[in-house]
Image 1 (cartoon, rainbow, N blue to C red):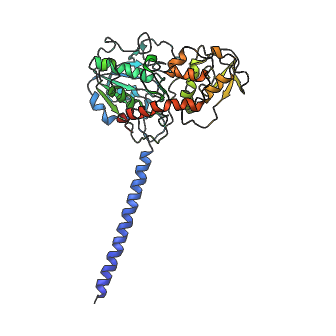
Image 2: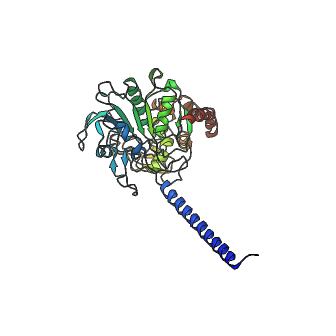
Image 3: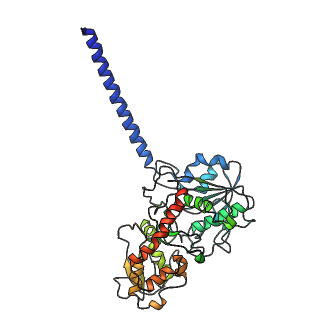
Amino acid sequence: MISSSMFKNTFLFSVLALLLTVNFQLHAFNTKKKLSNEERTIIVGAQNSSLYLDKIKNKKVGILTNQTGVVKSDLTSNDYDTSVVDYLLSNGVNITKIYAPEHGFRGTADAGELIKDGKDAQTGLPIISLYGNSKKPSVEQLNNIDVMLFDLQDVGARFYTYISSLHYLMEACAENNIPVIILDRPNPNISIIDGPTLEMENKSFVGMHPIPAMHGMTIGEYGQMINGQKWLKKGIQCDLTVIPVLNYDRTKSYDLPVAPSPNLPNQKAINLYASLCFFEGTNVSSGRGTNLQFQIYGSPYLKNMPYSFTPKPNAGAKDPMNNGKMCYGENLSAIENVDKLEIKWLLKAYQNSVNKEKFFTNFFIKLAGTNKLKQQITSGKSEQQIRASWQDDLDQFKIMRSPYLIY
């Protein structure tokens, strides 16, 4: 027989248990909600400082960076308002030299323009150009360096030369026993692995490795692949550390806070860059000398195309393709973002050109990384046939790169 006091105690216990369960569930929900908010905030490698500041403490530090090497002074803000150089100096890091890639430390020079050594006006630090007479640091240029940092924003295209600068920096540091630390950043085109694979006989500064035109890797992952595949001179390997991006994975989109170079002014240009860059090896303008760089294309030889523009010298394009000439083509600035390397515009331009004999320049094969693409286009191959010819190499590349992926 159950007494009334036992019933009361059982009832009170049940109510207490229910309240505890509800409280636990609410706490779990709030904790999960808090974590979800934190997970939405991408923290770039440079700001993931607990993983590397101790490694460079009391050492003489060099850094290869430019205007894209930025961090937030306030992590709750959306503003990347502080140079990585200033950030490191404020944390007591002894930076002795800044190294600059294509477009220079401030990122204002033309594509292909030679960059001279100099001094940073804000910090007084010497700037060593790695896009001048030599693209690989010399022994003298690495003097007085104990450890090298690398912080550049890549866009995921083989011919975007920051990965070539990374190669030469790693090689020079390996030869001189200097460790390299890559401060990783997201790839805004990380979901795209596409295009023809470079054949090594066509190796150049706009394509140094046997990879497709779009590689779908962060620059930290790419550095690990350079090392792991022994692509450096004589197969040497660099003492390499990658500081990862926090709260990032391959499903997340990422809008760059700073234009990575003068002719990639916005997210649309960054998305279309690899697809339209092939025009740099033709007589067709990719929009340099306008305010729609890599968002339009056109040529004086495409007179039946619907859009027209006239390239003129501007910041980042002192002498643009077809300078001062009326060009006819297409405006792609309002289209949906592409999820592959598009060649349909290249094919359309060639088919509509009234000057096919002079359509391609010698630079096209360097950009494509292969002789085959030009041959396929001139012989009238369809887009589907051209794409099918890439597939085996793309499948092999995905297998090769898999050990080096971080995210």
